[in-house]
Image (cartoon, rainbow, N blue to C red; front, side, top):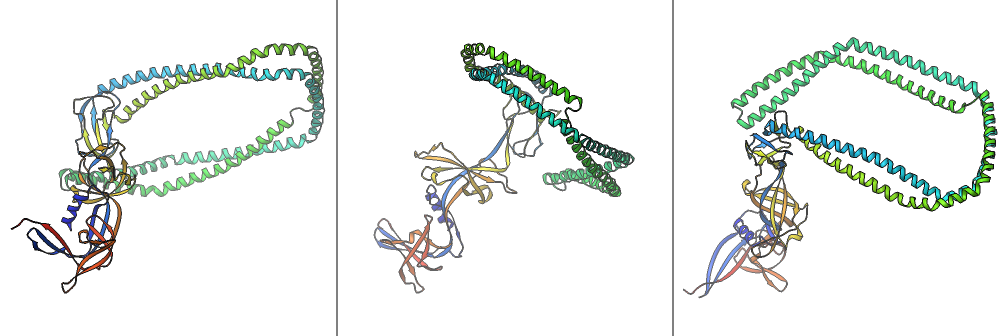
Length: 614
């Protein structure tokens, strides 16, 4: 079956119904014997016998392709001199692995220039913000003034004409209000004593709770002071214990790393093993010290928690009492704004205000006609100013905002780049890897001059890789994003890797025959113990239809009579009989048999070919 599958793969590789695989379940060979009979001088008749077997038939798209890695470029925002490169292509790195070392002086020159540029950009930004703030305030004041004038101008005519009537009505309302207020303050005199007693009670409650809270805080302060030395000592012992645990974990990781890298019996691994033993010993000592004081430490903390709980409860009671006192005090002040002799003075004041209001009414009656004529003459100019105010305000605001935005963008860009330098470069000028992966490409060597924002190294992702194939235009519409696929790589004995369709190109590549082909990128998940490299060859299969555990025979065994399908079946006595069958799924080489045959049946295939005379 393997030789037949390889032949079919070559023939059907570009066809939608390409063979993905045929899994043979039943044992036994396909061809039992081959015999040739000469029919005439120019024809040979070849007979083959096949056994009906059970297996899987899968139909889909199958294409050769190559792997491509998911690469991340490591850049730096300034020019600098490279002193040393620490990594090699193919080397695995983790986040924090040193990649290269920059010359300190070149970095210092770059950062000094950034500091000057940032200071200048900040100055420009501050000036732009100040101009924006003052300019917007001025423009807003002018705009609001124009709006007020415009809105008021349209109504002022009617308002002024009715103002006399409003003033008379208002004066009468003021008299009525004074009578109501006098009645209100008379009633207040009857409740004054009780409200004052309530206010004093609430105030005393606040003072008592305040004293109680202060007493608790004093006790708590004394306790913490008495136990501060012990608590500090216990915290120190706990810190040493936690540090010993971290040191032990770090030593264990280093030992495992050197074992994997150099071998368990290597000098490097032996040295790390000794360090691990020492770290384990230190951990045991630190753990014993901590266990000796842990109960005392917990007891002090429990007492502290108890004090804090009591203080919180008292604070909550004090807060409620303070709120009650504050609320009632505010109500009291609002309710008793005037009393006693102040009430008589207020009545006199309101009477005087009434007389003044009447005088104002008489004056307005005399000046009414003149005021209306004056407003009418100003209305047209005010409305013109109002119409232009919004346009002028928007123009000013937008222009000032644009200036600030430009200055802010320049400043932010400089600060971000400067912070990136400080973040990614240690004090010794070393640039570390920001991620885990494999060094795929190194673009600079020791002594090179680095140009800002170019890739120093390319790191391939440890999480996934891509497998790229070309799909013909006749099949591309059957491919969809996130569709599942399988990939076999030659480097791994055709091990099957699950994959999904990640992207489909819209721009075609034109084949030698003139057909359009589209690049389909499959996403491969990394597996333990497997390292992908750029350009690994293999074959991808996008399964479209599948029949599992079915009977199948070679497609060449079929003969057709109208819409009926027949095969030649050989019985136990060697007699050949024609049998009608019902077929199902076909992969181009084999065809599913739904009825008419059973597993183990022997079928005959006849091939006739021409030959020369002998």
